[in-house]
Image (cartoon, rainbow, N blue to C red; front, side, top):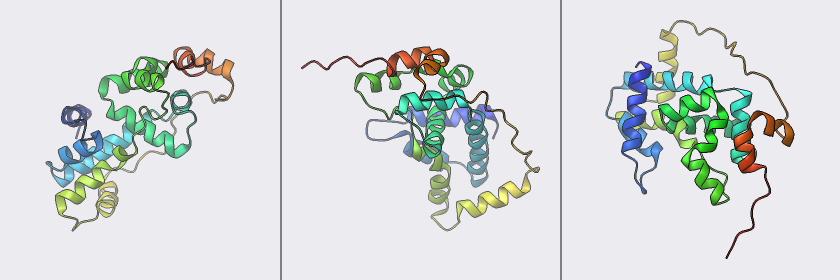
Length: 193
């Protein structure tokens, strides 16, 4: 599965979401209409895209949006970026501070919630789809290990995470992520009502 087809899968799943049907469920169902090989190829692209935004500046954005962000939570945040679709993913990859304009972030700030863009279940959609497709008779992780073994040996990750900095330093956060910092680090207005 090439990157364009990957984003087509994401777009189809996003189109199938409803108030009662979360993205991860729609993604699982979309993937389950494909072959086992397609599901494994999807997971390969997903992992590549999730790894590409494993950077300090993106983590800092997640830290502000989530009111803190552990390593596990950062994995969920990066899955949520992918679930947001190609445009938002690319905007965040280019400039994490652009997430200050994301509708889910704006809504979460207004409601004083800290879960915007964190989507744990999306990390597991391919495995769930594989199980659904095979009726649970084949293990996704065994199939994944076999799939990975057929690929060229992956190059050791030498990805540069960029400059590490103190997420708890408000001035540093205002300097690096001014728009997000203005949403999250300013004193909240008192609620009316």
